Image 1: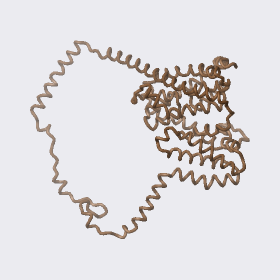
Image 2 (image 1 turned 90 degrees about the vertical axis):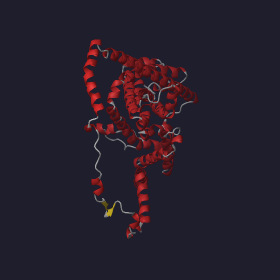
Image 3 (image 1 turned 180 degrees about the vertical axis):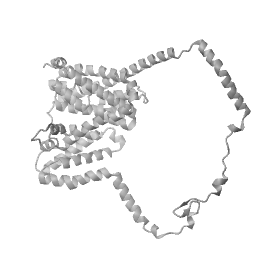
Image 4 (image 1 turned 45 degrees about the vertical axis):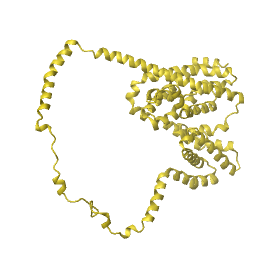
Length: 432
């Protein structure tokens, strides 16, 4: 899933230039707000869980108190049964003792044979056959086959790059096969980085960096600029446009293919949610509460705060849905009139920050490692799909909670930004 977030970073060179002062303000607001959001969602979820446990204990303690007369009556009725069991144990009836297995039948059975050889026969009696002579060649072929199976995906995309991508690019100028295969190969390379380094050099950032360098080099061989190559990388032709029957569309680029796959990958997160639907139903209040506690301050707090520190109105509005998953964040920012490039960058950075610094913040907040409810709610609401993809490899229960938390938070933001009166009020906070 991380691969599908790389186009937002690859297209960063096409975004409008931001002044150094605005960059500093956005970074400061992002860092402080990210830590505060973690604390708010974590402690809100923990408090709701504590209240639910207390309420359940109180209800169970009342329902489980038996009447004194019924308790004594039940004890009296159990006495004969207990006395019968005790007497049976003390008598030690032969039927209670396990029967010893008869091993004579096993000893008398003939040896099992495998390929005409008895299992018990010594290996020294087996003479070398001519089949053992080419063993070295067979071992070498097995190693080659094992390497190809282990790196099958890399071999496939490398073949696409060399056999299809390069010829199509230099004969027709169409970039999708070339850029897509190169983008995927860079993602494989980024995932091959050792885990200690990969924790800070996230695969999304590393893939985007080397992909931009590769697109720049490939565009230079055709005498075009990086800007032209990036416009060919994503032509904004989505599958929805084809479904609508729109004509005269440019051919989709590699970024358009990955964006379409991103939509499908988000939908696939429903699978762990269905598998752990009972845990989700039991923790629904603990998910909904933090989502509401996070959505309202984000919508009404970030835009005026950024605008007061000198950030433009469009970029200030784009900071509101900063923790919403990318697809829904773009819709929310568009409803508010925010800048699309800013929200794409901020949303992806919020997602990447979850796997990088999320566990450290949770540890500083003293959230237990086995509290999968709080961990899932916090990472889902603050780091959306990228953090959910990380949790799928560690704890599928937490990933299911993260998926639902991400969905509820995003839907809530869409609803709020679809109300004209709310949108007008938020825009008035930044002077629009």
